[in-house]
Image (tube, rainbow, N blue to C red):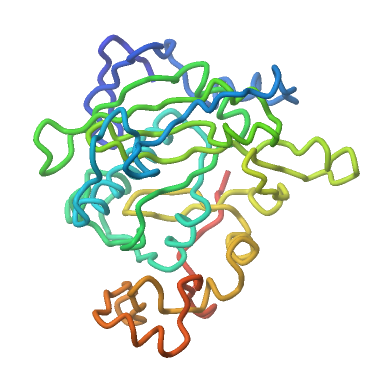
Length: 328
């Protein structure tokens, strides 16, 4: 994909321009064209930083205070998050960057997955607008999490750091701008850099909401002990290569998405088996017929029946999400 200043992009037909705010992407730069050069063993660079690069707002830790002075009204959070993940996934797909959903976002995909509509994949649906498709984000959620491979974080840092991407969104006058920002401390691979466990962010500059991006790296210490597939993130999550790769294809918020190969195992390891069976959470009850989390007015009755705020939602194993193996 060629970037000019300004450049016109065709991210599923709705991304109107990507204008760099600091660094301009170079020529025809896509991930696959440089992946072999990036696929190497990386060494941690520099000492452990004493400063935290990404900061959060004083009013809520899921907002970037540079772009917001107060949180969104409750009824606007989910539509903004939906557009946030759709634009992120579309942008990463356009440049060929390897990314997948994880943590609570993967759990919400597990529960709220829908059979996709018959329209072509992407944002330009004939039957659904960008922000009004089937609900998959938990209705009580206010954040999103994705992961990328280590070659991808180097790719994004070199070619796309601090680039601003404009989307024309249905019903949003003037559209919205999203900022891709990479933490310069991503080159420090040690988990002892606990102030900088987030490697990048995709930020909605209209609201301050953002997606946390974390890179999955080779776990050198475990590999030296003979665990040849060992992977880790700076936030101390640990995996095996075979748990994540090959990535599977599915849909999330009506757009194509990658999910880790052993998604059920990973969710159970992170949240416990009850996270895949408990149908009551945060004042909501999962409707097996509609596959939607419905708000329950009288939350106290869940408390009386033993429901605890620490419980996580789950679905029975006989209702698996729609996935297919990546043919590549």
